[in-house]
Image 1: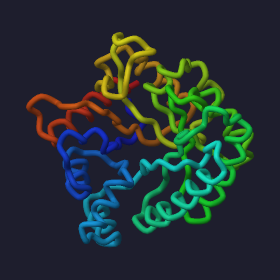
Image 2: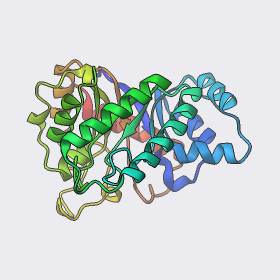
Image 3: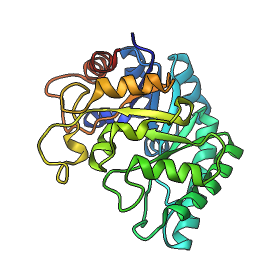
Length: 274
């Protein structure tokens, strides 16, 4: 049984240097239902004369949903001026994403956050969520395993709860769980409707947890991540949303972009079937 939907984070296609429309075409032809676009790729498309409404029609014509967007806003920066610039950037980019029909945007601990308390994170996330929802975007609170703060699932759950944002949603990623020391049991009690999206990937036993980097991520099932147990935990929580393949590999040998995307689906289904 496979109760989840399939999505492709376009970071996976980085070695191919594809434009955003090519990314959409590859994801659709491979058989994904959703796609996670990077804001920088959308902006590059617009800078070359593209139009948001035309891109939206192109995505819809290919049967895809823009499940989430990858953006980098300093929404919780310790410096008030940098934080305000982060909110200004977030507002501008979310308005663009809403016009594109995007459902959500990731909100990781980007910027200088080393001395930011979790309660300060919560206050900033409440402000971000109010802004995002007014525009029509759902912010997905993301923890980064190697960040100075907000680096584990427990912290993300605390921030979501302390923010008092109704139905606040968290982005789950096994790589960040591993690098930040989170455990599967930390997911217990988190209902599926409070999980925004799940990035799927795997990681090898070496380099060590302290030395491993994004580029070391591998396809689900090709490393030591507890993918089957994570699938069961997600299903038990009632999560039926997207599993989105997010890799940062330098190359895939001689595979084409379409072959890589199709391989991703096969790997996800094998690793996350119940």
